[in-house]
Amino acid sequence: MDKDFKNKTPEELKAIVAKYGGKEYLSKYIFTYLHQHNLNDINLMTTLSKDMRKRIVDDGYYITQLKIEAKLVDPDGTVKYLFQTADGNKIESVLLDENGRKTICVSTQVGCRLGCKFCATGALGFQRNLDAGEIIDQVSAICADSGCKVNNLVYMGMGEPLENYDNTMRAVRINATEIGKQIGFRRQTISTVGIPEAIRKLADEDVFPRLAVSLHSADDGVRKEIVPAAHKYSLKELLSAMKYYNETTGRRITIEYCMIDGVNDSFDLARKLIQYIRPLKVGVNLIEYNPHPGADYQPARREQIKEFKDMLMQAGFETIIRFRRGQAVKAACGQLGADRLSENKTKDEDE
Ligand code: SF4
Image (cartoon, rainbow, N blue to C red; front, side):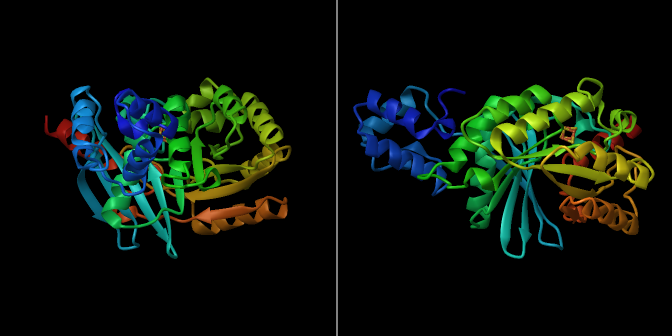
């Protein structure tokens, strides 16, 4: 995919344009055209001469453009987009509106190999990594379609961003660029299931997007049950990587905790969580579990979630509850890909 203009940094575009005898201002024009105006046709870049455009296209350069296959609007205002990639794969992204603040949640992989038990994407399995142009174009396409300006960008859709590290970080850098989308690093969040070596690598970068770690339990047994990746990465290793991140970057981490009835919502497990995160600089998001056809779990009771939150707050941890949003269109956390899961299930039953 190295001929995709959309995944190029301004410096890389400058080098490409120079090959065709173009000055730096032309590469800046292309970058702005792509990332601020969300336009996608090299032939319409009329600031470049006709001859230059022809030579660029003849040399195989192109611009990634995802196709919007479907758009579903939840009564709460959440919008789910189903995109098709050039090779026919399907990915989903979500536009959330919280009191006028727009957050876009993008996918980083087609499917996911980590198979978290509460997640519809995990049940779909893994197809391939998205390249940076495909990650970025989810934002461009949603902005072009909705006309909105993005306040926050979260890499929390389908896939594990840190298993697609280079493409995700390239997308983060390009999305932050001043002559592009200007979504600063502090307004971009990478959400990971917790891959210790990748968290350490992230801590050693020269730029720091926000980091969210999907912990879901501080008990090894319970975590292994719902997050199979925990068989490979122990809570001890994860803790050490998070400490390193805190110390190296000075930044706080968000702990994501999906509240599942009778699985990880007991007060004993709340105490275990407090003990586990005590040495860290973290805030906690308690997420109401969103049911999907691939799992038998139920959401924790709201009173339980509130008391769980109170325990964390009393222990000194800033804690937010995220109640379900986008449920009607299966756009909520853990539900991306749920439509296809239902389709697959129906097919299996018909056969
Ligand atoms: S929760 Fe994230 S890491 Fe786990 S299976 Fe779903 S997409 Fe993959």
